[in-house]
Image (cartoon, rainbow, N blue to C red; front, side):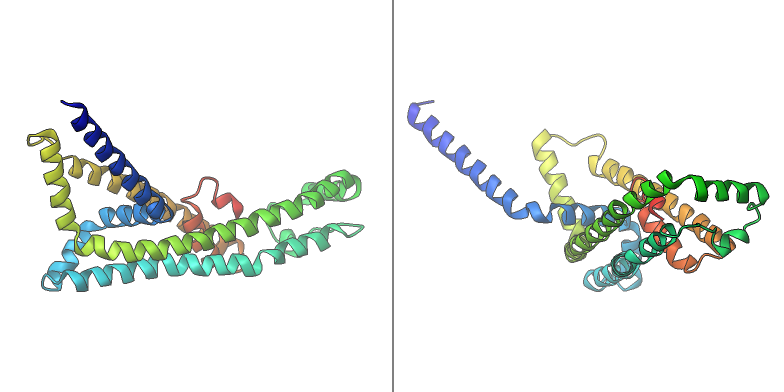
Length: 259
């Protein structure tokens, strides 16, 4: 290979690298939305195929209905949760602050109705309220950082909603043109490896993603049901709303502990 040919090859590789970097910079804000759309479409692809068959093989209509279902089950509840956190985050902290500012801290009335609240626990509470001033001061100092953390969480959920909207838009095209994309990927892999693979890697990826998603959301649903039953038995106001919040927070490490 002559020097001129090597220079031309180097220029081509440099131009290709520049184009790749530019494309990455343009798509970087949308990468989370693209990944979320891919996971959602892969895990619900069998449902989409059944729906498309019922609708007479109309991919555009079936894709639109799948996106509407995703919006109703994920995006709208997440928006309501973020709005509720933003509007009501300060209410319990203000109540706790007023409660801790009292000279004599009496247990709340609802706590006395709990079966485990007996005389021994009452004596412990009185000792805490009279002799635990340092602990009370520590609780007061921790209130503000905890409230700020909850506000930050609501802001993160709000930012994630925008990504979910982009994911819904991208997911429509993944559903509608998914089979074409899959065939293009298969053809590219065949040319790359110069042979037919014994095991289709796309099938393996589908099985792995589907198993992980079903496991995560199955565990989240079980935690939400158990939490809702517990809230309902304890007489906590808004048990169903808290149960729904538990479902969405369960996909986050230590998320249910925030409730």
